Image 1 (cartoon, rainbow, N blue to C red):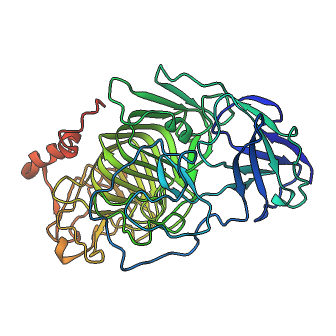
Image 2 (cartoon, rainbow, N blue to C red):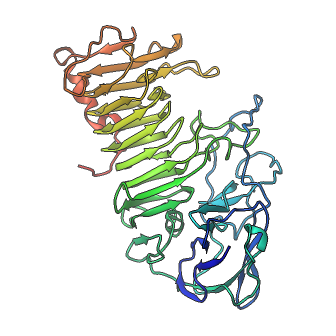
Length: 482
C-alpha cells in the first residue's frame, strides 16, 4: 500500500484550526484498532494532541439503571468556552460521580462531560482523523507523527519534517459573518468550529451568520448558550451534516435520567444538538443521524428558534423539539416517534415520513404541543399512526396537544391516533380538512374516540387561532419571519 498524499499536505500554510487530518493511499486501507497519531508544536516539540486508536470509540451495548433519577435542581449550563485545552473530558457538569470508562472522549461545545467519538474512519482510499476539539491555535506550525500499525501496509511517518502545516493567522469576526468550507477555503472546515468562535448569549444587535458551503460534513455538532445565530447552507441537498450517534453510544450518566423533564441533564444522543439557545435559525441544509435506535438528527432545547428548508433525518425520535420552534418547508424522515418533545412546535408546509408513529407528544399545560398546517404525512408502513400516547413508565400526558389543519395524509391507519392511555383521553387531538394527495377529504369515521374532527362552521375561531404561529408558539416568539 502506497501513501499518495496527506491532508494537510506537507508544508501547507493557512490551514483552519479545526482541520481534519487524512492519509490518502493507492488502495483502500484497512484500519487497525491500534497505533497513535500525534500532533506536536513544531517550535517547542510540545505534544498538542494524541489519538490512540486502541481505545474503543464508545459503548455498543445499552445501559439501563432503574434506580437513576432526574436532577433535583435545574441543570446549570456552564460556559461554552470550556474546551479540551482548559478541562479534562469527562469532568461532571452536574452532581454525580464519574464512572471511569475506557472510551474515546472529547469536549464539544463546552459540555465538559464529553462525547464519545470516532477518531478515525475510512472513506474511499483514505483514512480520516478527527482531532480532539479546540486544541490547535492560530498562527502556529505543527508536525504529525503516525504509527505504522494504524493501517495494514502503512510504513508510518516518524520524521518531524515529513508532515508539517501552519494554521491561519487569527481571523476577524467583527462583521458577524463566518464561512465554513470543507476544502479549507473558508474561515473554518467544520460547523462546530464556526459556532465555537462565537461568544455566548449575544443580543439582537450583534447577530452572526454562518454560511456553509456545499460538502459532506461528518461531525457531531453540539452547542449551548448561543443566541442570534443564523446557519445557512448553500443547498439543502448538498450540505449534509451527519454523524453516527445514539443513546447507546453517548448515554446520560448512569445515575441521572434525561429527556423527560424540563431542566434535567442534557441528552447527548443527537447528531446535531441546539441546547439552551434562542433565536437560532437554520436554513437550506440537511442534518442526519447515521445511527439507529434513539438517535435524533436534530435535538433542540431553547426558545424562539426557526428552521426553513431543512431536512432532518433520524431514527427513533428523528426530531426532538423543546421550547418554541417554527418549522417551515422542512422534510423530516424517521423510523418511529419521529417527532418527540414538549413543544410548542409549529410546522408549516412540512413533509413528514415515518415507518411507525409520527409522534409522541409530551407537552404539559404550560404550552401548546405540535401544530401542523398544510403539511404532508407519508406513512411508510401500516403502523404509521399520527401519534401515540401510551403510559411511559409512570408518566402520562393528559395535556398533550396535536392539531392538524389542511394536511395531506397518505397510508395512515383509519384510527389515526393509537394507543391512547386512559389518562391521556383528555389530550387535545384535532383534525380539520385532512385529505388525500388528490385533495379528497378522508373518511374520519374510524378515528379514535378522543379525536375531534373540526368543521369551519362550528370551529372557525379555533382553526384560525391554530393557523397563527404566534398563537401556538406564545407571545415570547419574537422572530420576524413573515
